Length: 270
Image (tube, rainbow, N blue to C red):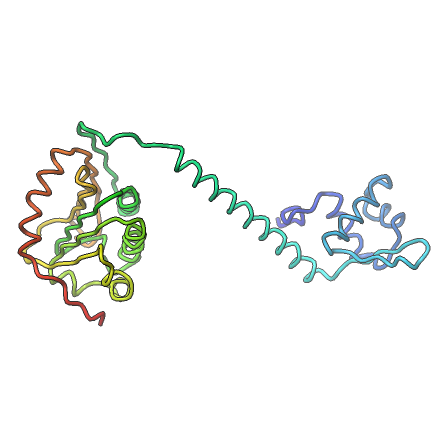
């Protein structure tokens, strides 16, 4: 059940404000009885309500009287205060993340093989974008005819957003896909390509026939392989991530001639 305390008021402040609404203009002593806020605390509570612009006082009267600000106005003021507080906290957390990012070092790239896997569409997408975000220098993406990361739903848009962020970090991106997959790109992905990605000097797209499977080569040391759902090829069944420089070098060696022979993408965004 919603409470004024959820918006930052103390128990005494919430009691006093509700009592003011019921009582109309009233003195501190009368409000203390009506709200069951101790007389020794009532003036501090009323002062706090005035500070939050939830109550007004009539100084000229003797004894001094108080009245509550209308609920809609009062609640909006409390909401504004809470949103401002949350924004300040968010800024503080962002500063903490920036400091820790500089402080924490992932160390040297692994020299021995290590692999992990995620099963299920959502888990696979989470693993993919995590690894895209980890790229420092280069991302190579190869997408066959059925690729969940370029589907017609939210996943394709999400991947495009993370590619854009990678470009902002200075990562070079090479994307090789089949012509038939290009035709299935959702409008949001096509719009992002034409408006943001296509003219970027570190982003290149080419097409080639008969590409089998979908994978991502990251910084020449890591390969993310998409395993399609056999019952729904447009949906990822799993994502396998392999950190193995030797295996990645083999993937790069296989990819290079296919890239050289591929056609640059001609895409009008329609």
